[in-house]
Image 1 (tube, rainbow over the protein chains, first blue to last red):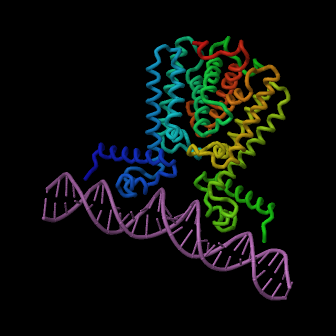
Image 2: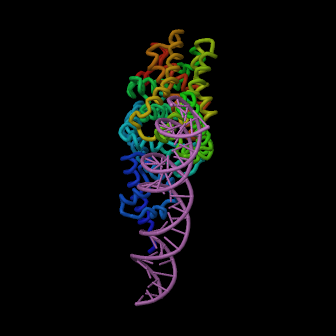
Image 3: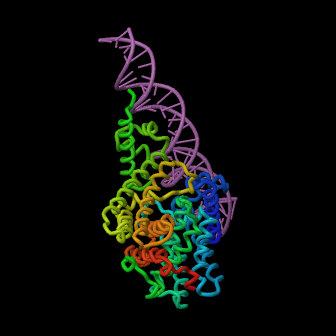
Length: 207
Length: 207
DNA sequence: ACCGTTAAATTAACGGTGTTCAATAACGAC
DNA sequence: GTCGTTATTGAACACCGTTAATTTAACGGT
């Protein structure tokens, strides 16, 4: 009765999909092995043959969402023809995903405790979208529109987009400020801070 | 045997403090009414006389942390003498709190589901720190170092700091990039994006 | 000083959860 | 068909949030 790797993987995906359905419908506390069992017609202890524990299932669910997120970002990159539009297209895709798939976006980035690096697979999966940002920034640098270290600049964009959409998805942009109002000046700011010697303007220089 | 308002408030704070101790020691899932009872020597149902349910206790814990956070930010504001240094001082206080009190910082801003605005008291408490940012930005505008709408610009700083420290506290700044490396160009970028006509540089102008 | 009322606090209980483990059922090999 | 391996199940444990019933303690009136 040995399970083939294909069957095992199929069962894993089935459990992950069912878990995601529960999560999207009722939040994190709605996903339990019992409910998952009722939804898929298996017993509530079967998941233990495919995942070490519930946290492992959640990590797999997070990985699935991360990969979908990565796919959205990747498509935005190949779609933008001129290098100058890459960053705008990338940012629009990032914002669009967080708006459309708010629950999934939260699942990707939400972490309760400052966890001591369990689930290295999840850490690796989360790296991929960022690496896309690095590629986009590098292309912009190559086009002569930005200067500096691509990873450092990509990090600035990443931090900015993450801050904006994390606050948005948590309903903490409540002062009559919209995402669209903020996105433009924020992107412009990061561009300006890395646009070369004449465009750069640090805090000290201003003050 | 009527409880005086003072006694009731004292008990509430006692429970909140014990809950925070449990949370800081073992994360969110370590705070339960049973453990809280063992830690404080009361029965595990007594908290229901002071809080509607566990979520209400968590909200109160969050409020407590938010107010401590607000206090840290407020002290940074009065400490900085020249208006030009206000934003730097404010940002340093923000970053310092998130580094020192990582768990508390996470407790403040972490929200699982896009909750439908339960606990308006928490929402109000979270507003206060942002209002401090508005004050700081307004002072900088008054000093002639920035232009534009204070709330909009404050939002940009708020988004930036939130993105930076949220990624940091979640251990997602892993590419050899430090908070200090990123803070300076990020602040400079927001400054540049709102430094008046000559300093502003939107994405389109660059491209 | 006693008692009845009222509120505080505890105990008991219910349904649900993650997790473990012994028992069962299904399959391939011979 | 039988055996042995293995996937799957069901029962059980400890813990959780929550509710209801029960006990305990404090207070005012007489």
